[in-house]
Image (cartoon, rainbow, N blue to C red; front, side, top):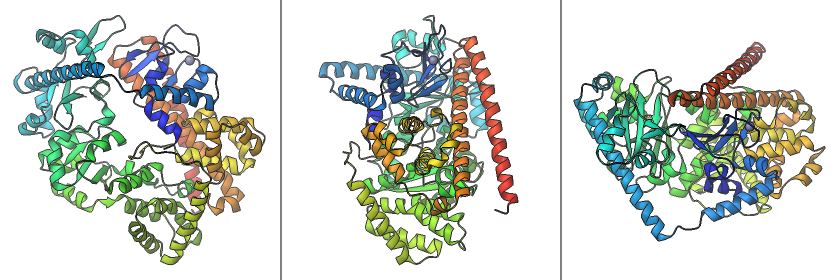
Amino acid sequence: MSVIDDVKQRLDIMQVVSEYTELQKSGRNYKALCPFHSEKTPSFFVFPDRQSWHCFGACSTGGDIFSFIMKKEGVDFGQALQILANKAGVSLVAQTTPERQTQNKERERLFEINEATAEYYHHVLLNTSKGKIARDYVTKRGLSVETIKNFQLGFAPEGWDTIKQYLKGKGCGEPELLAAGLLVERDDGNNYDRFRNRLMFPIRNIQGKALGFGGRALDDSLPKYLNSPQTSIFDKSSSLYGIDRAKTAIRQKDQIIIVEGYMDALTAHQHGFDNVVASMGTAITDKQLAILKNLTRNLILALDADTAGEEAVSRSGEMLDKMLPVPPSFYGWVRYEDAHNAEVKILVLPQGKDPDELITEDASQWQNLVTDAKPMVDFIFESVTAKVDLASAKDKSSTVERLLPLLSEMKDPLRQAHYVERLARLLKIDEHVLGDALKRFKAIERKRKATKEMKTFTSVIPTITSSSPLEQYCLALLLQYPELKAKSTALSPDHFENTESRELFVKWQQSDDIDSLKNSLDSTLQEYTESLLTKTLLPVIKENETTRHETFDDCVTRLQEKRLKSLEAKKQELLAIEAETGGIEAQLAKLEEQGLEVSKQLKEIFLKQNNRRRLSRSNGQ
Ligand SMILES: [Zn+2]
């Protein structure tokens, strides 16, 4: 892990930003008067889930903790890193015992409150006339009374102070209810029930203690799923729904299946697939993996066809897809497998079906998919080689180049040999030729690494999410082919989400050549630049100027698309939150306005891409 990632993992953006501006809660996120421009109503938002910030006002920009400090302190990247590393060090100082004792007491109290809440909502669902709408819903979805009882599903009825009054009657104070995330505080200091007219899923830890809740809207309310906010006992990214009910089966079967949604996990359990848990989101985090470490080493990830395809390599067969490296998340998984002697398999769901529908339709289908789940590396190999034209030497060689880094990542020589053989077979090439290519690749890698300063690993579990291969590829093209600089005007620093990439792009724009660029960079970034300068691009990029330009154009379009999509997602989320909390109308109107603008631009990008695809098809590709 790089120093940068280490600092990112240790620091929370809330902690960093709150030193500069006063944050107010707004749903799961926080808002504030923008620390960078003068304003009367807050348009500066912090997203703890993504560890990012964004100003929707005059600045219309955002980033992570590094860009925040750079902008706020007016320092360069290296100085920002120093400031934040110091902070990260301070935050690691162990807490004193009496403090911890108080904390433990507070945590126990929150568990009690959640338990009482779960019981109450469960009672409303099963036994009251108010609960009829929810009873009808779960019946329609096919859940049995046994499942409802096992998972203690509940119903939060309509009304602004149902749970508040109930728990106050049981002796709870409003501050504790706020701390448990059951109430939402308004700007004027008043508060109300967070969950209203929602089917409630208590989220428990492995010991069965209620950490928080997920609530599904039973009408058109947004968001469709609302979770408890982060509290001193609940952190969505380190929880797995159903783990308390699944742990015994996971140990017995020595296997865990990870699905995405609450309903998927419930339906699976109801049909006897009791080693299933839900990630409650898409990407699996290190913290979630840490929970599983002691239960099993065999993981199956159920991915829908779209996610799986996008994750491995998109299936469009476009030029850029054949050149982009395998996404870093897969390297993370391969390292995870190595570090824990684990095996990760991929279960690809049929197009447009989730496990819930599939199991309800025919449970044997699910059983077959589980049996047929493919080891992660096989899955990547097959996805990548599926598009290869076996008659084309160029295609074969580019495929080998893309997969060599993954092969070289494997520490177990037997495993490596197995996959060398497998790839040779898939591509119909001599195994020894491939073996030699791998040796050469490793030798080059070793040399490259030897010149690098060795970094100490602070975590044995790999970071599953890492910087974007697309951003890195684009920068590698720019650095290796200065002629492309003229085309880069279509990009702004905002198109790079990763701070290192963004910083490098800015410095590169300001420099006349590579030497002056290198001189202007902080040492951490020099290393990054070096890795991009020496990044192996496919031979066709070097040989064919047209391909080079087309590939770069493709990169630009994709980066534009990515930025607009993430902006759109952020805005949708904010709209939902503002609607949920009855927020400021002016803010809403402004967001809607910006939202429309984004939709318009996204549409243009789609049209552009469609045109290009049509063109390349008519060119006989
Ligand atoms: Zn601003």
